Amino acid sequence: MLAPFAAHLAATPDPMSRDEAAAASRALRHAVARYQSADDLPELLPYRTSGPSLYHYSVTGPAGTMVSGLVGLVRVATLLPHEATIREAEDREAVDLEIRPLLAITRTTLPQFPEAGPPATVTFGSQLHRVVPVRHRGEIDLGTLVVADGHHRRRSAMRHGGDRAVAMTMVVGDGGRGLCADAFQRRLIGVGPLPPSAGESFTIEEIPRSTPRVGGVVWLERGRKPRLLRPRPEALETMPEPLRPIGSAVAAHLLYPHVGVTQERIEHFSTPAAVVHALGQGDAGILLPRVPIPAVFAAAAARTMLPPKGSRFHPKPVRGLVIRATA
Image 1 (cartoon, rainbow, N blue to C red):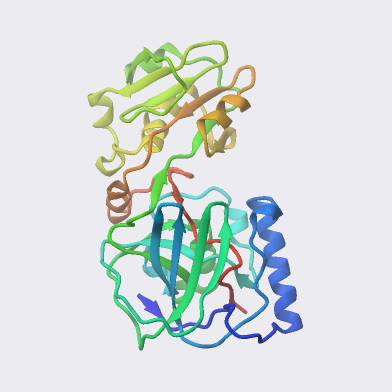
Image 2: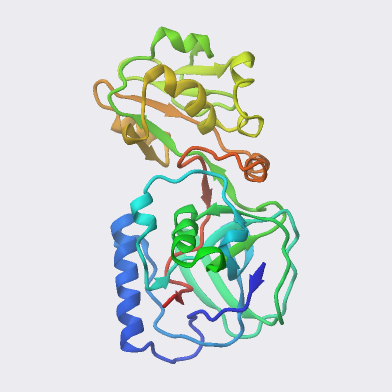
């Protein structure tokens, strides 16, 4: 459910107040510290408008439009999560501004609205992110919404505002069309070699390259060829059915008990190469295939959570292109 809201948008030269600018600066410093380098953040657009309350957000690349969605306020209690989160202490942090929309997906086709003002754009790598206000009246029923990215922020908003809390959210329709759901790759710190007991849950075979494989978990150790671990059918039957197609859940349910790893000893990476580079003596790495988006819907509907960092949706809305004062 998208409800009316006011967002800061580059549209008319109406400068932020001193307090708003200070709050935006704090929020962006917070993002740099937690997520990425300052070079990866777009420049904060120092303008605002109170205009229409719904926005169209699109991402285009060299091959054309990648993702198209609507940005508006969503009551976060209506957003279904699909994975657990790690940093509970950070969920309690109050922030002055929302500097990136949550990302949510729905099976519904989004309505089309005429544009109602000039666009704001920012280039992020090879992508062009564009946001523009659109004309609409009242709320829009988009059916069931599932959180794709922003589980920490959803939970933080609920802790601060309860069931009535709202958050700026970008909704992508048609089952998340245009989004990719990759896996985070993992380094298991100090777990040692693959124990023989893993054969109780997996068939194990050596493979020539350190690349993810559909239907299995790739195990890496320094000085050894990669091994593909395919879950045995009888082992899969011990897992909740919605999680069986998802590599991170297979690893958490069927592999981690054999190696004794806990969440504190798991480091997450975006690429297999980064895992290989980070492996130290006594470490292991696991490579996981892409996450089927229909499985994300199934897990959310069943209230069956993926493990933390169970999926990695992209492209995401950038920080700082659209921001909303929360205080």
